[in-house]
Length: 344
Ligand code: SF4
Image (cartoon, rainbow, N blue to C red; front, top):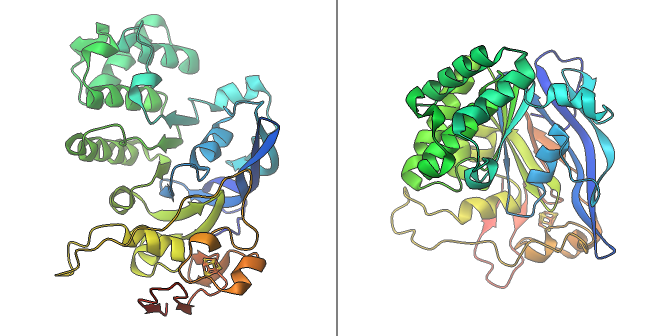
């Protein structure tokens, strides 16, 4: 994966270029997305990883055209789907892309489903709208979709409250996949589920993705989910991509201090005697008052004076691997603990 995009590359389904999105709240400008660029290849999954508030969901909403405008504003940037710039499309043109070409799996199945409609009707409605099928055929396909996600079609006439959390998320996935979209935007699709169900739902998404050759943008804060599901990874912090590359480059050679911090926050099941976690100190900066220089410098254990002034660029550090850090490859701890030196 590269920040440098090329629309003429036939392998690329979606290309986001230099996207800036702001919100206005209490007369303050909230800088949610600050110059994000990435590509999603056909049939592949890109994991967008970061903490809550990093701008991940805003990016997904920008792609599928459901940003709440106002208070949100797509300030600048372009989004190409199959080579077509989609940010300039009107509501009617965009409605053909939503659901048919690009669909979204929302984080919380409780709020994604309508409690007053049967699950079957909710799946069939989308099919009837986008696929121009008769009512009978829409119902038939909706029942097939239920079976596909592991729910007996006899439960077509039941309501969301009659399903468990994991089953509800399966219904949400059935709705998202019903019209064979080319791209799924999955926003923390397993976060609201029990750990045991999470693995099942991830397997299901992967399976269906393979069968339908769908591409996916998987939004998550969970590196375990990324390891299981993604081909490429983009780590996002304060509305900027700070590190990107294919999964193996990121997992084998994490290079940005924030990515190192994310890995350090995970329990180490391999290294004996390594019981301490090393969480990232501090909090995500206020997006209405972002720090100057490198946005990560107030939390970075490797920060130098230079980092408070200079704005780092996302630079290629080998292969498809890119990192936004002035000291990438030559990190020396500068915090009081001075525990380690990392040369990457
Ligand atoms: Fe840390 Fe400086 Fe690199 Fe930013 S540029 S991540 S503050 S070392």
